[in-house]
Amino acid sequence: MFGRRTSPVEPAAPAAKPAAKKPAQRPQQGAKPAPQKPAAAKPAPKPEAKPKSPPPAPPRVTQPEAKEPETVEIGGRSDEYFQTKTTIFNALIDTIDLSQLAQLDTEAAAEEIRDIVNEIISIKNVQMSIAEQESLLQDICNDVLGYGPLEPLLARDDIADIMVNGSSHVFIEVGGKIQLTNVRFRDNAQLMNICQRIVSQVGRRVDESSPICDARLPDGSRVNVIAPPLSIDGAALTIRKFKKDKLRIQDLVNFGSISPEGAKVLEIIGHCRINTLISGGTGSGKTTLLNCLTGFIEHDERVITCEDAAELQLQQPHVVRLETRPPNLEGQGEVTMRDLVKNCLRMRPERIIVGEVRGPEAFDLLQAMNTGHDGSMGTLHANSPREALQRVESMITMGGYNLPSKTIKEMIVGSIDVIVQAARLRDGSRRITHVTEVLGTEGDTIITQDLFIYDMDGEDADGKIVGKHKSTGIARPAFWDRARYYGKEAELAGALDAAAD
Image 1 (cartoon, rainbow, N blue to C red):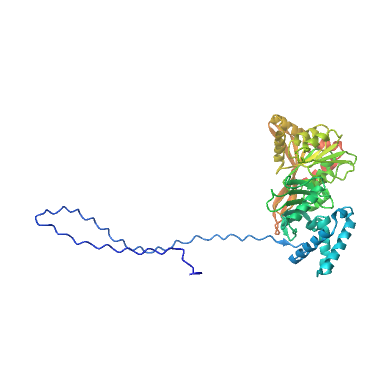
Image 2: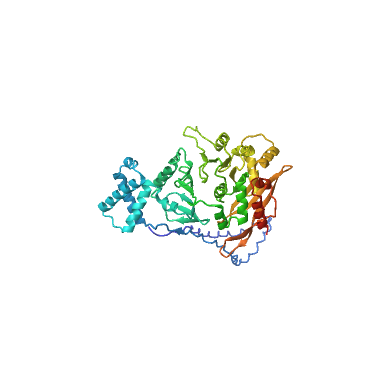
């Protein structure tokens, strides 16, 4: 019958009836009885097996329930608000002339949008408070003229990274920890439009034919976009924000990233035109540290920067900023980092700053450091000063140079004077863990010595890493003569002596 549950197990077949025994036939008279086979011994009846007790169940391993990330409320919005906003926004697009709006400046265009939106609200008789109406006006102006839902996140100075995973998941990094926000886009089309608006400001594009793009915001924040079909769940947008107030070396001291004595040594390194390589992992603060070191460059020096996306914020008046360019639709017109570094040598630079060394341009940067452009700097990804030297050697090999390993090592030693290692610790804090000198070679090994190291002692009750910067006791570093040439030997000696106490 319908709705009746049937057992998934089939009923057992009925047991077969035992066959009837035939009566034994008597042998006829005079006939020899046929030899009978000995009867097979009947097996003894098996004792009924006692039901075995089930084996003890193994202890259940209970996995801790995955905690959902806490959502950070940013300008709380309800679903009804988003529906109302979508309705009014669509009516605005049908009403406004975007071509004429583009001819107005930002303030005039915002006033025009606000007037039209107020008319639409009154015509549709939308019931909302004054605060909600003001929030709606601001959001729609951001959608048309700015970066939409990203605007309140970009306005906050405590956010280090903004990570958009599709239209409905926006994460931020605050204090070294990643948090989920309630910010969301209207749909994937709005997210894609904002991505295109960002990259078009620097003359680049992102679409299905070129779905990967690096760009920057006007304040220098780094932007990466990867669009469908490479990104399955909608466009993925990552923004590495920079603080509006430029950090100084004293700020790093206040944050505990470096000790005051170590900061003084870094100041002398930056001032005395010592070739420096800044090493560290992703998000360890390499670019911030490079910005701080460039703050000690004299204002009468000509500085040329080479970057994939221009994000360095030098304060000197004589700075030339160069930026790479991706190929066009036909695969032509690409300008690589190596092309920029080569061209720098023809521009009469005094210092060359490479935003990130990641390929064969390492060879050209070492040549620049070796040919009179003292004080040049660059960053690269490595987890220790020793690994940084190995990476430089491997990047030179990537360029197809058939040079012996010993020759490459001698070139590295003759070019790089100091390696500053930055690290991001597990509690989210950033520290300068090593200030290391490159001394020379011994056989096939590059000899280095540490001036400062960061020694971790443990963690406090709040889970924060506790440690301190220590001097290794080097009284006269290898760049002592360089410091004396610039009249900084007394300050260098004082900083090293104070660190040794």
